[in-house]
Every structure is written in C-alpha cells, then in structure tokens.
Length: 392
Image (cartoon, rainbow, N blue to C red; front, side):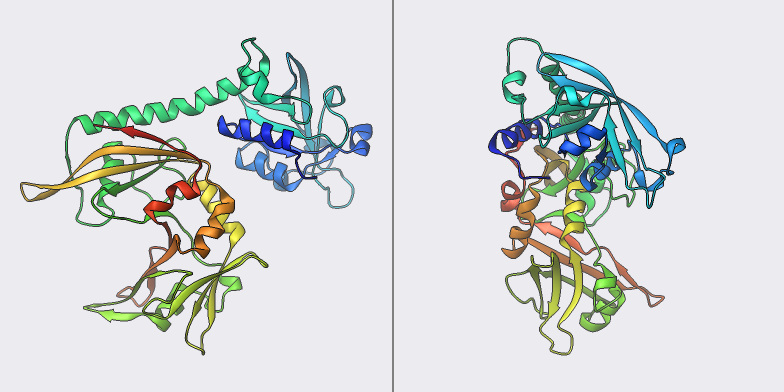
C-alpha cells in the first residue's frame, strides 16, 4: 500500500482517537475493473484477530466462499453491500476479497478504512471523506453515528470497571490474599471475581488490569515473553540458568534485570538491532556472546494484545492487626500503545527485561518471565495521553 498523505493520516488519527480499530486497503485500477482485490496481510490479520474470518482454514473454490454483510459510506448516506471472502481454485489460492457496489465510493489508489462493528464490515473512503468534519458536525450523518456507537460501546466496559473499582475502594482496605510481590494484583482480581489463571489475554472484558503499590517506585510489567529459541544460541531457560545462575540459600536461580544501557552483575545486557528487527540478549563472556533472540515483531504483537486498553491501579499498603491490607486509590486509563516507541524505550533502558528462573526440585527450570517492564516515568512515553481517576 502506498504511503498515506496528510489528509488520510488525519482521518486515521481521528478514528484511532475515538477507539475505532481499522485496517486499510488500496484498490488498484485492475482490481476495480475485475471486481477483485488481494486480501493483504494486514487485512487477513484484522479479520482473524477480530474472530471474523480465518483465510488459513478456508477451502479453495466456490464452495469455500464466505459472505459478510457490509455497509459503504458516502458522507450523508450509506449503501448496503456484501463482502465476498474467498480463495480461488487455481494455484495456492491466494486470499481475495471484494465488496459489491464498491466502485460507487472509491477510485483506484484511494484508501479504504475497513471497520468491524455490529456484525458488519463498514467501508469508508478516507481519501475523499473528511471524517473529523462529519464526526463533529451538528447535522446527523451515518459516519458520526458509527463512530459514536463504537466509542460508546468501548467506553461502557471501562465505565463498568471503574464503577466496580470505586465500590471496592469505598469498602476500605482489603486484606492481602498472600505474602508476595504479586499480592496487590491477585487481591484486586479476587475482589472483582476474576479467576486466577495464566492466560495472556486481558483480565476484564478486554481491559488489562495492572496493580502496584504507591510507595514503591515500581517498574510496571508490560508482558511476559520467552525468546525465539529457534533463533537463539541457547535453546531453553534451563540453559540460561546453567550458564548464569547462582546459589542463594536453598535455591539455584537467576533473578536479575537486564538493560540495553549497561551490564548487570551477571555481565548481561540487551541490544536492539533494527536492521534485522531483533532484540538480542548478550553476555560479556567471550565464550557465550549473543545467546537469546526475540523478534521485535513478536514483542510488538504482545504489547498490542496485552495493552489495547489498560487500567493501572495504584494502592496504598498498610498493616492492620498484623496483616497486610490494600486500599486501591487511583486509576490511570491508557489505550493503544505507540508501538514505534517500544524499540526506542528498549534502547534507552526505560523498558527492561527481568529473568525469574529457578531450579525445581526435579531438576527442571521454572521461568516466570522473562518479564518486559516499563519505568513508571515512561508510561506517557509509550501510551497516548491517558485519563486519571480517583477511587477514594
């Protein structure tokens, strides 16, 4: 797809700022004449990630064709359409997509925004349509209605969760469930009725919950992600532990923070190679050198999956009758991290990596991470302007 011009960028920004998730397409002259378009990687990923359609499992030929109700937008009117998603019988069956009546709203090499909402695909020409003007118009129009409906739906979950948190805070300090660093989060999730599990998905109806103690200058955990072992010199956490672990009381473990701005006490550091889009963990030992690799693409994907929308909940910790208690006091509400900033913050040591590896009695290695963490001061560097709410 060609680069977006300033007008198209402005339209995309307006949609993003209003919580509208989109994918983009650029119909060619040939595609419009033949009523066929390639379903590009971003389009396929959008359809799959929103549980709309998965081309990888679709059969080739007419019997495998899938059709979806669609709506085309023309400023103050709409046109009903049908999207056809299919893989031709010929060759490898490259994924295709087409919308009936599409030529009524687009010329070749103009950019279409495709939006999934209310069981329909909605198609807006962001080359010729001024989305911002229509959104803030005093005159009712279908694009304004669509954006406001999506925004309202997204905000309703956040409002619901905020109300629950205020109710918990109103009841005063809650006794901690356990004596551990993770207790502040576990206690809140239990109070909200969220079952404890190891899922990588957000905690509450698509919103991730991250709790922390206000009196600690905590780094904030973004997500956990093991290296790409096929690209790495070491092939497991056990090998990393064998090479760099240490004995501490009864445990043989490797608990350490690794940064791109210097060596830690184990001689470990990170480096970002944007030429090949890899994050590399390296050792000062000449016999080891580079030993673990993450693709930046995978790290970006994990960031977007985990923090599409997040409540960062601050809590005061106190001792009552000899037991630790938490009073949840404040929420910072963030949306849509700026992926391009992630690599820069790694290079600047604002995002770091924590190893939490320990030898199990049976001899295997248990890895709780690696955890990618963000300095508290870096929140506004990774996320667009956020909202802050008082709970008490």
